[in-house]
View (spheres, rainbow, N blue to C red):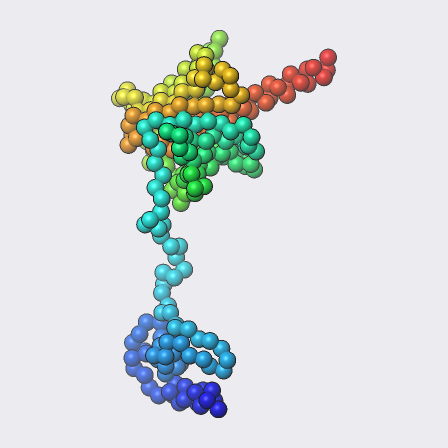
Amino acid sequence: MRRISLLILLAVISLAPDATAQDRPGAFPALPGIRLALEEAGRIEVAGFQAGPLAEASPAADQAAPPRADAPVFTLPASFTMVEKFFALTDTLTLKAGGRTLGKVSAKFIALTKSFRLTDASDNLVAEARARFFALGSTVDVTDAQGNRIGTIKERILKSLFKVYTNYSVLDASGREVAKSEKLDWLSTEFTLRTPSGAVVAQIRRDFMGNLFRVTDKWDATVREPKAVDPRLLVMIAAYKTSVDNDRRREEASKKSKRNDDD
């Protein structure tokens, strides 16, 4: 009887005029009294169903929530190392500094072109890199966790009679060249990134002696001007180079194995 009385009361209220309901955004014109009763009651029971406070309709309800203000910010120190993991499904470099693990960059297991994911120590996505499918030379686009462009890495391979040289150009989000590197391959592998004016902004080095007794890569990175070039681009250069070199080694090993089988 109590529920029936409540239903009758709500029906009577709904027939009464309610000017305030018409003025409120998101109100239901056909049921203004019921809307007002529910708002005043806060939470009531009607015919065995629980009804909670009704939220006002908002045009922004369907929009994606903005990034949290307290979201962790990924930063890299002036000097850090990138060490290739021996046991990994894909080419993976672990970022370390001062005995701390800063994160890792890994090649994606399934991808049409070379693609990498950079995550922090808590495995939160920090950046992604993807090589373009159709491009003259190798072009790698780097984006942040929200898909915003960080920059682009362009690789140029120059062949001479006796040697192959590799140069990298680093472009910012607007496509402007902010740094260019010269890759030196004399026992060690070293990239020195310079601004168009010639100032050194960063160095990435894979030392020969440091890797002599290793079966995986170890890169040492030094950032002099973090505002000139986003350090995440430097990480992607090392990851891309390690992955390309591993592909070349695997290809050479496969050819050698095939020749041995033919013999």
